[in-house]
Every structure is written in C-alpha cells, then in structure tokens.
Length: 214
Length: 214
DNA sequence: TTACTCATGTAAGTAGTTACATGATTCC
DNA sequence: GGAATCATGTAACTACTTACATGAGTAA
Image 1 (tube, rainbow over the protein chains, first blue to last red):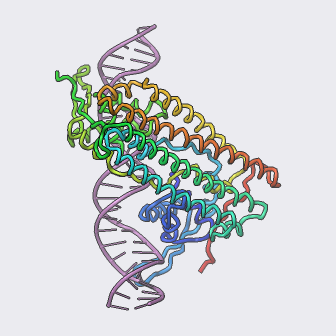
Image 2: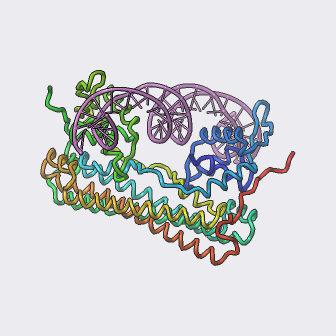
Image 3: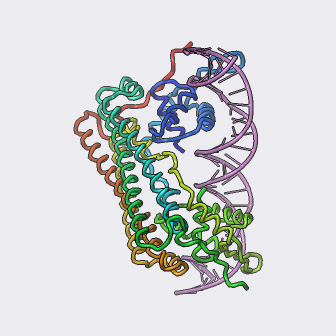
C-alpha cells in the first residue's frame, strides 16, 4: 500500500489540505501514483489516527472546517523506513496486452483502433514526462525547490538526479509502448494484405466449448 | 474488470476446472494477467450465474464435487464484444518508481539494493517471456495448438502473430526496465564518488513540517 | 447572479489479497 | 503409509472506484 507514502512524501515539502494533495495526483497523468479524492481523504484520516500526520483545523464558513495536514516525526520515521525497504514489482496485470493476446476474436479494424489509441496515449505521456524531467533538471518546479531548500546542499545533486532518473525512465517506458503500438499497426497492415477477410469482420469467432454431454 | 475475460478466453480452448485455470495464471510470471485461486473460484460462480460459462458437475469422493467449466454461446458473444472495445491503459501506479523518486530519504546502499532487485526481477521475466514467445512462434504450446485447431486456417497466421507480438512487447518492456536499473546503479556509483556521505547513511532525512502554531 | 474553483465528505460497490480449512487422488 | 498434487471453497480484510451530496470563496 503506497498511497500513504505518496501522501507523506508530498507533505514532507510543506503542509497541505486534502484538496491540494488530490490535485498533485490528479492534475495530469504526470505523476507516478494515481488516486481519487475520496481515497485521499479517507487515507489522511487514517494516517492522522496513526499519528503519522497531524492536522491544523481552521473554521471554514459556518459548519465546515479546513484541515491542513503536516508530517509528524513518526511520519518521517515511517517514510525513511519505507524507502529503505526493497520493493518487488507488482505481478503483471495489463488489460491492453491481455486483449491484444486475443485480437483474433475481433476484426483487424478493431486491432488497429486499439493500437492507435495506445500509440496516442503514450505519445502524450512521453511528452508530459519529458517536460517534467526537464523541469526537474532545471530545478523549476515548486516541489523540487522546497525539497532542496529543506535538505543539506551536499544532497542536492542526488535529490534532483533520482527524480530525473524516474521521469527519464517513464519516458523510456512510454517510448517502448509507442514502438510496440507502431509495430502492431504494421502487423495489422501485413495481415490485412495476406488475408481474404474483410477488415471489419472477426478473424476467428470464439466458439462454445461444451464437453460431450454425459 | 478483466479477470472474467481472461477466464473466458482460456475456456475457449477447452473446458477446465477452477484449479486448472488457476494454474494457468499461477504457474509462473509468464502470463499477462495474474489472479489468486479464491478470486478465480468466486468469479467462475459469478460467470455461471450470468450464463457466460456453464458447468459439468461430477461427484468427487463423498461430499465434494468436481466442477468443469465451459464457455457458452453468450460467453462467446461477450468475449467478442470485449475484444472489439478499445481499452485505455490504466493510470500509472508503480510502487518501485514512486519509491525511487524519494531515494534521497534513504541511503545509497538502499537505492543500490532496490535497483539490483529490479534488475534481477526483469532479467528473469525477460528470459521467461522470450522463451514463451519462441514457443508460440513454433506453435509448441498446448494452448496455441488447441486454438489453431478450432479456427479456420486462414486465421492461423494472425492468431500466432498477435500472441507473439504481445510477448515480444513484454520482452521489450523487461529490457527497458533492466536498462533503467543498470543506469540507476551507475547513477548511485557516481553519486557515491561525488558525496561525502557514508553509503549506509540517509542522504537527506525526512523532516517534520509542522506549520507555525496559531 | 452565475460560473468556477476550492474544499470535504459519505455510501455503496468492485477487485483483489491473505489466512484458514478441508478432502480426494495418485504415485512411491 | 506418506507425500505430493489435485481440488474447492469461506471469511475477513484492504485498496480502489463511482455516484452522490454539499457548502464556501472569488472573480466576471
């Protein structure tokens, strides 16, 4: 469960409201973790109960309160502990690749649409991630500036370098996906030339597998 | 939700028990989707209620039953519908990359351990996926043979080609991750030479962010 | 006053994990 | 007889999503 660590890491730069935190996840696909606001509010309450973050509550209008969260010393310890723990990547679970495995149940046009959407999606992400990596390298984001201002200057190079390494890695990933989709489109073209089937017809309809009735 | 479609796609080759289906997901990290057996049994019951699969129940011992599932015509329709629907990739959610963003909170040794584990993990996956792609290309797996035997021969080339494309894509992905980890290790070496901090000491401990008390 | 952004939540449901539990069959 | 593998589940829990709901502040 990483949402909590993502939240704590953001709070390490400065106190924030749930809303501000949600924006960091939400604004664009730029960030490494994604979460919806109900989950963020719920998790913040839980972190507060556990003493990993604390809150400054200010009245907002008559019956509402603005809750600004900040990181506690216990939260700092937990963050440091988490970073030192080796993380094995999650098991594979990719709906696009799963579907592509069975493209023969659909039409060549369907496969083409899928590869095209994949291509565009990762081209956009590649641009966004690249732009973010560049901004980090030039130390231009608010977050990295705050981070640097709070850390010993001997650590500045490493702080920037690790973050740039992550976003450059995401750029490489996006490029790999773009290339996969391009090769997919070529494959569809090749299959279309070689096959007698109309491009909007399924290549091999799925068939029931009723066993011999006993 | 894709587990159901993964299950239906497997059942399109032949009737199987929950146990056999679980093995397909489980045997190794080779497959594109992962699920634990309780979820598989639960989902099969649900698919049965919805008429997408059906079951042949045979007594097993005194009080147990062996349930062999097969794909119904309605399941075939749903499978065909699903394949034709364009799938947008899931939002980013990668704990390893998230953690790497904050490696400065830990030590250089910690970062090194993480990159090393990442490297080994994806080297192993690369080999497994490559081997699987080769087997598919040579039409040597039981599943692909069954699939081909049930489809018109005009579709054979496409059936093999799509699956090979998926596993070749996974191989490329794994290589991208291996390269990322290698560059990460080089980065850690470089930072170690350039910094005065011991390799097992945190570079920049997280600090609390209590706001000015009001 | 209207629209937009800031701000905070609840409720209901789905998807997936982990622990626990049991029994049948097959092969040595 | 014992070990491995075949086989099927329940229960409790965590993580995440979607829909619904409301109210405050601010700028045109």
